[in-house]
Image (cartoon, rainbow, N blue to C red; front, side, top):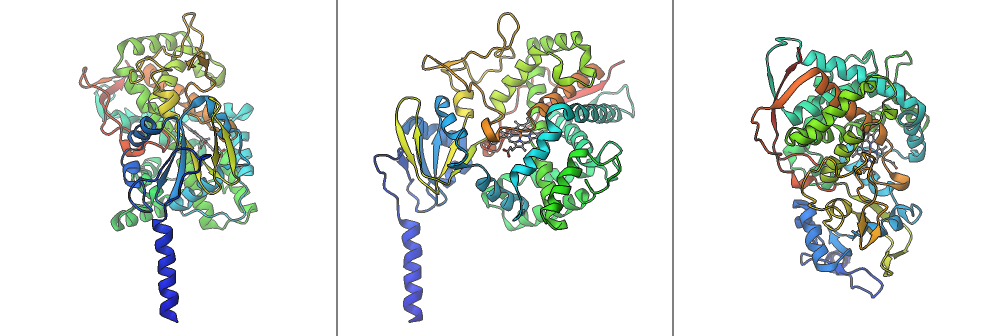
Length: 480
Ligand code: HEM
């Protein structure tokens, strides 16, 4: 009897592994791949952008692929993106986010209300409170930049641009948000950065569940160290612990999260708040240093707007810088906007086609392919043009077209709709402040004047800001 049950269970498992779903005429084109259960997982994981481009050529702007047992519908027509972004009831943001939180941070918060945590974030990162964060960030950046060249002030210092930008912004962000202005929490932010890099370097593998055993040990140890660093953040009521982290910690406590889960949640927030800003600043500085005309234009604009050093960063107008940043993000921000289908939904494409999205599947937008790198929307999409988002009169350019129709989404580094980026303005203000301070306090140049931008680490497509596969070597010293 036991054997019969065993065989039946095995047969059932085999059936689910091998069974291919068949396409009904209401489904998007279906491509299950030839490997049972895994489907296209291997090709997808190696270089998601290349894989999706190949599928786009084969099937068009919408198709469903099988990836490690899941069916994922990829939508690539920006005219139809609102159908996904504006239906949070059928297409849920939090479920897939929770899967990732568990895999990467081992974070499970049963009583958690994501909407409340988001309100706390909005309170501090948007509106009138943002000025306080900006001014703390500015002070932290300025003092770290000063300390960077404290010894041998007149000598050139050599560094990789990626580590220079990421490390400075991470440390300033950590002090501003988690340590507070006085850094009462007492840890050396350089130690936190060092440990964070060990953890972050394996993030993609954690998200995909493909860590080797040695790597599992590395991530576990880094997670543990980072949790210890973050343990005091937000606990003390005295000024010195960042105001947002205090509120966030209070919310976690009220929701019944124990100490360990609170620390894991803080690590998740460390990644959410720091993981994209440093890489974005690296790409921007890199594009400027390798494009003398763009560099001169941004420097010239900065020399005219000395108010950047006031606390009202958001109100200073820097259209040339804004365009250069937007262009940088067009080329290097490559998140998947993933939603889980929790209620069957008919998706109405802008071209009049209709498709049924099945409950339990995932839907994924990949704006990097379109609109961002779409040659019909942006001419020579691979080329950095700092003034791509400027009109002739110097105002912001917003008119871009596809199929003769004006686009609502002509670049989408911040997502959009209900789950669009809460920290967008803070991130923009921070990067602008950073570039401004670097240019005004340092002489900074490429060690090799003809150096080119490094390529991208292709495994990172889908996870927010891309990271380089190499680095640009720079030298810098304090201005006399
Ligand atoms: C260059 C920097 C950044 C980029 C490119 C970026 C990009 C994004 C994108 C694309 C999303 C949408 C994800 C989706 O729809 O699936 C998002 C969401 C989010 N971002 Fe950012 N982000 C950046 C910096 C920040 C910072 C500094 C913060 C800190 C306040 C932040 C907080 C958030 C939060 C909380 C969400 C989730 C919103 C929700 O739950 O609905 N981001 N970000």
